[in-house]
Image (cartoon, rainbow, N blue to C red; front, top):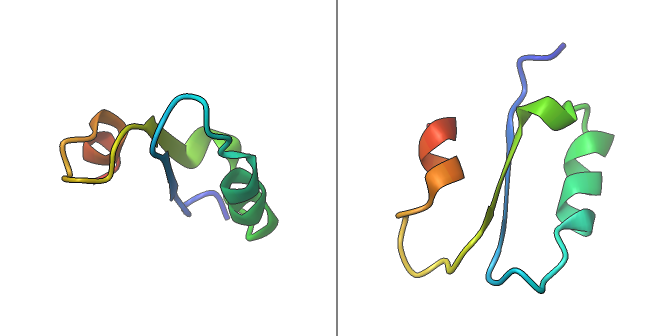
Length: 53
């Protein structure tokens, strides 16, 4: 365990990522292995997504 990674994205800073975080944690993904972007999904120019891949 501990090799699983997750990615959470919401479109704006006022949206809440808790539901996505909870779903990943229920699947056994550690918080330290979850990357979060609060940015538009129009393209893949997302800092945390780039770290993940």
